[in-house]
Length: 332
Image (cartoon, rainbow, N blue to C red):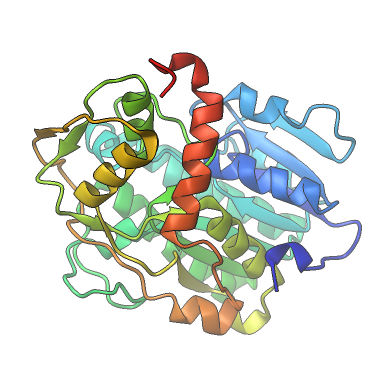
């Protein structure tokens, strides 16, 4: 059964924090298309106005411009909400190494503010974004919940701390929390610009412009690249999950394993370009290999991802071709 066939009470209100971002805006779009009321909270520090402009005029959509670092704002956003999908955070491992204090303020304190506001507001389910970075240097593949290593970045630390708060808020206060460890999400509306842009959109954008992308390291690092539709499914499955699944964390991925250098050449072939990459130094804090065991999410959330890498990358390339068309050279 597709996640679009899931049913919630007709008048349900979903709050999506970080709703102007890549993942958040896709969640907002999916929920509105299913006919539910959606409230978006974003301060537009990393999210984009154009992502929320898509929903202006929809009677079931409202937008609050504000920060999760302000408890009063979180309380306002949670008022009357049935489900919270908490995506607001600062991402990027390298940037967190440069700005650890800011990551603590936004990712840890901001998430704690949201959990407290959700608790006080009587929210039914609190689903929050974690990350595969919490596995740190643990060498075992595939990555399984409960087998975490030493953390390698402030970003990873913030996500681990949020998971611990999630467990406590369920145990101490009864707030049904569900932590989702995303594995290298990609897809439509993912920002290809900036020094900290995710690798797939960044490669696509540069190749479309006839530029040679830089691969950090030797390109033999592997990732469980996860198409955005699978992440939407994970969030909505968590909203529909039972009490027995609360207070836990779950890997959200397809369960595949792709090498970066292989992806690069697949992209050049799909885009019809012949450009060799530049190899740069490895990035500090990066995990060398990442591949998810999703059996826990299957068992407890009935998570059954529909999009493998091949299907997802075709849709992503088509989206970037259409939306970055004005930047391309030679009609590539």
